Length: 106
Image (tube, rainbow, N blue to C red; front, top):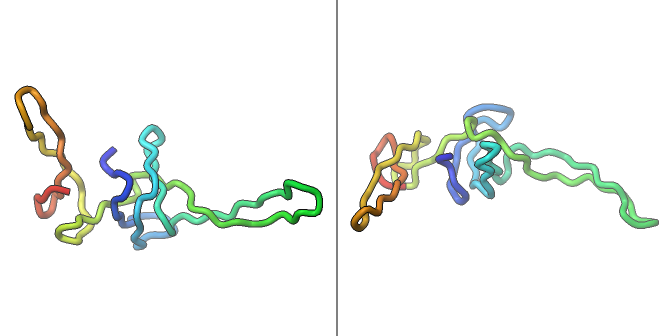
């Protein structure tokens, strides 16, 4: 999965289309990300003890990674992500994320 925790993303489809937010958590196995202020759902909580009232809380719900696009920190545009293989020392290679629009490292 190309989007990681801490990235700024743009929502490209769904009820929150056009909103921007920071990725709070990534779930690679489910291919979902949790973005702050996006896909807010209401959860009804039961009272736990006698005399306590139930409540309704609002919390963000995970959104599919195909519905978000990374905003490049260098050029500031919503972009796709590519990889560039860079060798550090002998036989050690690392993948670096690059912006498809400006070609800079992310």
